[in-house]
Image 1 (cartoon, rainbow, N blue to C red):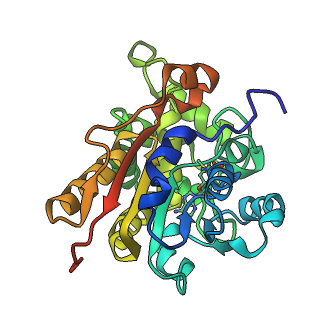
Image 2: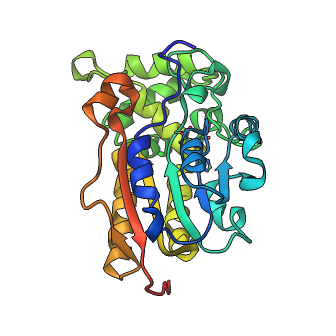
Length: 301
Ligand SMILES: C[S@@+](CC[C@H](N)C(=O)[O-])C[C@H]1O[C@@H](n2cnc3c(N)ncnc32)[C@H](O)[C@@H]1O
């Protein structure tokens, strides 16, 4: 594997520092990693915390299968759940109150670098973008169906795309669009050269489509709602997000639950990766970590 393709778990030291309380203050209970991916975080948790159960969730069955192979040595300390983390209640049922929950949002390098998954705007592939390949709707359905204004709204709402109307018009004119490079070229041609930033002109379009295909805002909202009920007093909840919309949802939820006394904020300000980490792993540059600790306050919502 070249270093460009290697998977580095993002902000793993910081995740560990916030998720794992010092042993003397650690509540009883299992941990749950909502986004198993390549198992980078999971490996840290399993090696640092002896004897606890770790529930691993991922919507991508291939990712879970890789984790299963990687963690055979940990035996029945690891449990696997294929599905969205919005179903965390089902995933951890029977585990009792949790000592910690972590979610590292978005997608893994493994997924981006597989042209067949359709996530990359630089590799030609089908317009798929599903995390869970058993799910029915794909990016192709969002691109080729629906009105121009629905498409424009989706691009603006999910990715703050300021050229949403122009891009939606170009997509509708170019239909049917069946593969990633056709979409990337159509979007590029629609954005005036002088208004382009340093990122690829189709980056936000791809992001918005991926979020829509996988209902990422809905998944995150349901996880944020479920967490207070599942955590033990003293249990911790850490979320790493990769764009401002997701970070806003996390910040508002944490602050509002801290306002009712259900959480204590562990990160008053968002935590960003160190300059050294960004040098070593440039995709980490947009990561944002927030963490809370569950109090004893009853959760009534
Ligand atoms: C950034 S990777 C996680 C990397 C992981 N922390 C590691 O150390 O290897 C994100 C993973 O979350 C999964 N995922 C994304 N949204 C999900 C959701 N709503 N429910 C469950 N898994 C999800 C993706 O399939 C992907 O494998």
